[in-house]
Length: 389
Image 1 (tube, rainbow, N blue to C red):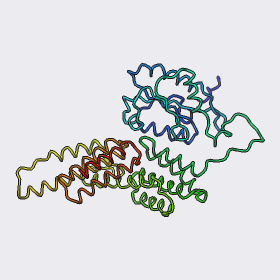
Image 2 (image 1 turned 180 degrees about the vertical axis):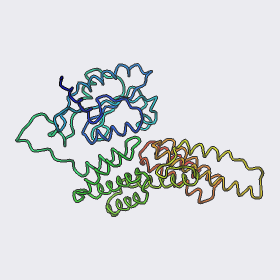
Image 3 (image 1 turned 90 degrees about the horizontal axis):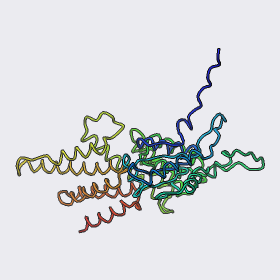
Image 4 (image 1 turned 90 degrees about the vertical axis):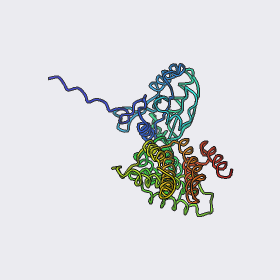
């Protein structure tokens, strides 16, 4: 009888082919996580169907990626891609393109070790496309000797990544669009390795590691807010007031506060929500807010005053909660806009406690994205105008 056919070769890196079309944000996060762990370069091609130059550039990038040298798997049975082209249609994934502030097409970005390296706006020649892909495909310094096909007994093995590098890689996973529980697990592994060598970590780097651990706790399902706050406290102990506090601490603390706010609002306004591990999406919060804002009171005076007051408190609570959920979803512009709207309403209709909570929500949103984020910079200026004018 004829011999049975050989088993099919495994897919590249367990299903990571050289060219990928993004279907949803979770898929993008998965690719970033696996590429970071596998020392695989990424080339992001932001395009649209109506973009003429995109239709010229994309085939050049595809050709360059497919022709890029491949690296052997550890068992030598098949090769792995050294670089992957990630195609993102901006019309289908506006959230991703907005978060990365893509304003012109085509835009090409490269990533190595979870960090964005190069950005090219506009068309490229074939030679330029090949050079960009080749740079993205080049292994990181700590992987070069293991990925080389040449053997040199006189060459010392490459040094492992430093603890500070491991912390940076963890943040790259946590800061990626739509970071998920799986990304948090991968980041936690990196942080555990970094903190196991904590004697080699300077205080500021150690504080960043604890802040990243807090972020990991908040991405658990359900989010571990007490655990996150404990990690924030550890981060502050690491610097002990003797060093400038890394911004990552304020970011982690803000995200813990926003997560707690979203959880409390879920429990108050979504009694029928079955999954205690998650929150309703921002559009559900927006719909509930719209329904509450259109609540009518039949007349003025008497008990109706109490109804109006209760309704206003609930509206402000929902507005702040919507801002929190938008921030946790990565929508900086939406979160800032709603937080500022809540502040304006509190100044007009609320008491001192309402005003205080609304302002704290604004600050938490700014900190969640970082004080240098464009939306945070603009939002702080608008908050000052609203508060003091």
